[in-house]
Image (cartoon, rainbow, N blue to C red; front, side):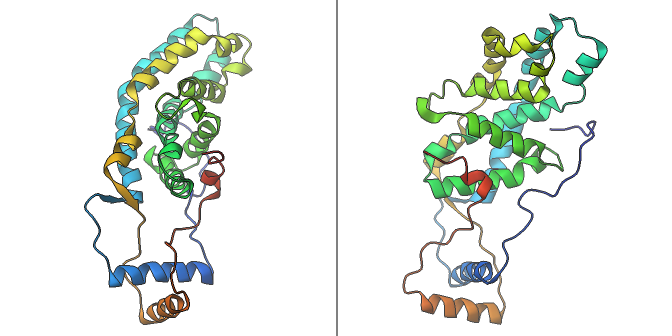
Length: 265
């Protein structure tokens, strides 16, 4: 989403560090061995990483289609206030508002994952979203991923997976706070203007599809498994499997950032 006009601090990509140590090596070896000995993958299954990639493709399209109307509502609302040059620049020029909006689009539908999948799988999916979302937005920092998870932490699913009546408003409030509307005296009142927030919420409410609900109704998920292993890794995996009579399904380590939003899910 970002056009590169915003100066940002480059940070390491989220999820760029792989688990290390013997336990991680054994887990990877077991996954490789299972793939070698193989089992047919049903047609109605999808690899999680690829599914998240398709999700972002759809959300980028949604954001591109709905952002102009949303941004016009924002600009029109601010135009009613007398802002000096510094105030207007602080609100509209130094922030990647299109990226904030994309984070809101992602968060609205990603929040439904917690009601569609068991906690462990939901944590994996949210972690995968955290891994990919900044790159999907064209950023090299964690601005979008941090904002997505801030929004996920504020969205309340108590109203039901299909209703989520307050979700759009919470996303809008988070974006406005990120822009700094509450830090300028002239615009602080807009944070409490429910009619204004409602207008800003409409493009999100109408435009963001329930992508994960449709996906979950058609596909089961599996996680990527490495394809090749050398003789030493095969021996290690065989020894590990022999020591375990009935190994449980293997999953990667649950990402801490994603799991922290699953309480009560």
